[in-house]
Length: 332
Image 1 (cartoon, rainbow, N blue to C red):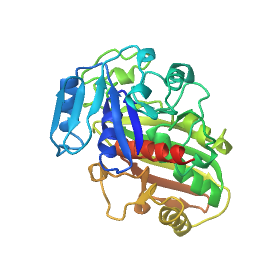
Image 2: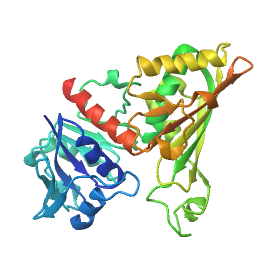
Image 3: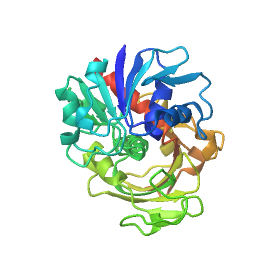
Image 4: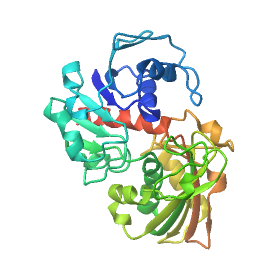
């Protein structure tokens, strides 16, 4: 059994716990969050996006009880240096608060006995960064590493296959992304980004993305070849990738489709999925893959210019990859 503690019980933290309940080899033993646990328990049980948990939940005396599962220790520690997850039985700490993004702010978990710390976001320093199916085989037992971002986990598998099979000369992408908690319901000041200061549920909001930098961490051979931006739209979950590429060799649309579909059936099984049913964003809520390729919206022009579209549940898909990486690092 892999014993895991979670620091930060927001959208990703709760998705990770929900995903762990479907696993026989993972146990969440402790969770820390600075907010009220009566409300956090309620939000775990009733989720507007992923629907009701379907299990009875009780919270009392710093313990979260989920029907059919061992009790989970809960904490409300605002000073992370005072957290001792190892003392509560955790082997791995998942950092999903979004507040601690460098090795210095994560090292104390290992100093107190945790074997691994996985950052559930892109780091701000040189923490090793891995994505399953992309560069995870380069993992060499590091005690602290990043699982990259949800967008990089969606982009990177497709980029790896295309660069491997056809060579990527240049790539530009747009991520049509659901709004997130750091945006506002109504117009409100957002530091250093005027557009993100506008109401999330009323606007299509062009903005920047850190996905390019994280993608280069995962696939350094693409450095100098890629750039992209993001557009936040009024849906609560799921993103859509729109990728334009110039390839190194002449191919056909059929070649493009075959390459990605073959990978989905083989080397990227469980990571790349394929949409044959002309879905829309809500159809992919709850899809556990890193990315879902859309063949009928993907094509090649003049032999070397390709356009690819693909979906991703940026909460559920990412949560499943975090747990997969926890499994991988324990077994390697």
